[in-house]
Length: 515
Ligand code: F6P
Figure 1 (cartoon, rainbow, N blue to C red):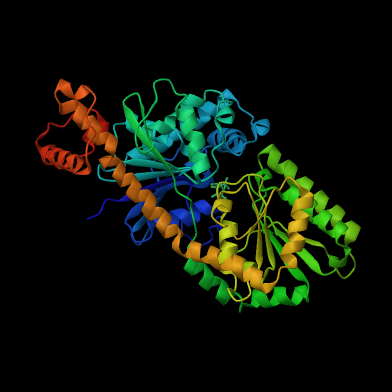
Figure 2: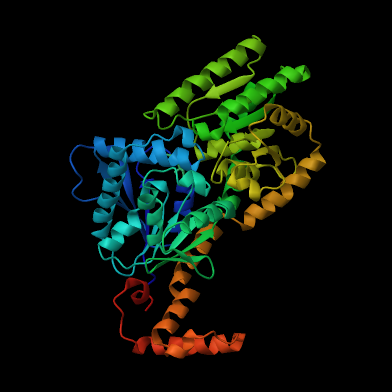
């Protein structure tokens, strides 16, 4: 029987009637990782309860066990609203200016990570593979190791990783960011994120870079890598084709009554650049009067993290700005910007993407941005829309057929929007085709497979071979080696592998869990 895959994330999409649809890439990614596997998805229930959860609440669906715990009000304030969303989120999105650190939040964050380790540890078996997701749970591997769990443990950061100088502004960063060295494999969305973290790792006293992006710290070894997250491309494309024939699509088509549709879909978050986007649309209408009454921007923006002050502030700012623009250009028969604070089902969104002539995906900083990928997948390949994409998203490295923009320059975005709306069919097809082809191969299933096989490999990594060599070879091996041929290396590796079962199990987990 293959080992269980244990996914750990702050939120868990428990499939129960009445549960709200969860927005964002993490859910899509985790569901794909668990598909066709036996596994557990462990995390916070989304509920606040003053009574400490004695045991996780369990929901079983086919081969997946969902195990969730409640948090106390204090945990929610200090761990989720506090260190995770008032400190780590802004910091990792390059917004040092918005970071609001407090020692109380820091200790609340550590406390909840310990709570997760206690509750999770109680049902971990030695063969489980553990995969932890996102910035809420950076110290979890250290806590699990401290409780004696020797399992392979991987981590994936869904959001960006800022450069070294920004990371070091986090007070006591070594306790949080440094704790990532307790994972066997730390995955990032892009090479840029990975390299930022590599630069950070080298500032940890005693850290050493090994081969193949491995790092040694205090006798532990961790490997880092870039694993761009993706979507279920073929399934999404099918969903959009069907949605195009749905009553909602018909209703929207009728309400547009010939207007061209520009679409923005984002959680209400300052990192998404919604204010800058609205300003760019304002600029577009100002300099292109011929487009007035011919186009509408539909901005779909579910509210999020409203307990955090900066989120409440942006809520007012966006609403006020949109009101002003609608007042300035609008007419009784035409609203320039339609603004909606609710979330839509996957199917409804896919239909909207397909109906949109242009998607505006212009975050100031985003780990990946799956809206961009979903928009590409949802298009009619014979008559696709155009994608405007911020150069500061992870997706920009892959979606090279998009019109890449700098969201900080409203004139530039306005000009790109005009170009997108007026782009000839042949160019739209030329840009869209290769992006779709790329996403059909680089889908979320490939992402999960690649990450998990890389995690499995960390147990047979080159550093492990050299560790074994150092342990068992006579002192002469410390003199410089003659350069080895490939077959020398192969022979040596085979000899070591043959030796493995005869060796006594060492006490250190970095060696022991290999066999
Ligand atoms: O990775 C960031 C992320 O987890 C996304 O998947 C999702 O969009 C968002 O954050 C959800 O945020 P929250 O759980 O705070 O509502």
